[in-house]
Length: 106
Image 1 (tube, one colour):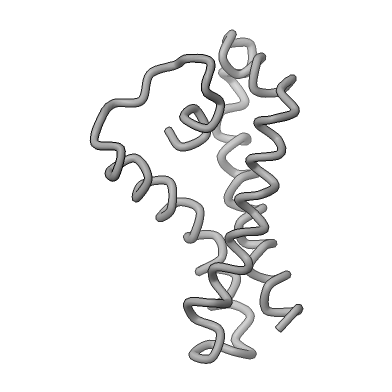
Image 2: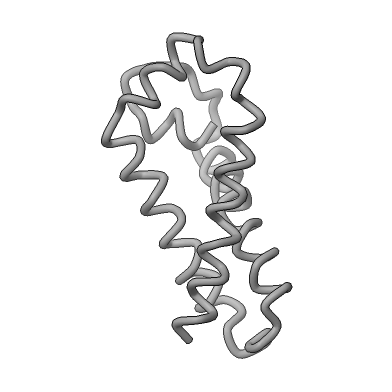
């Protein structure tokens, strides 16, 4: 179980890392500067990685146990699916504001 969660968390971490790699040219932008310095934002990021590992296990644990490649991919997809679901549920355009949780889910 622990190995499963760790592999899924690693998938979520790689997805987050690739997101920041993609945004690397925008890091001088004011919003990204604020995010890089915000402890709350990084707590949200780490919490999402943890939730991705646990959520992947709860949803798919028995079905893909021992298949590390599938666990990794589903763990990486979990935060993306979760972000889109939250955005759809909010049913509005997210604007840059002081709410870092909203910024994360853009």
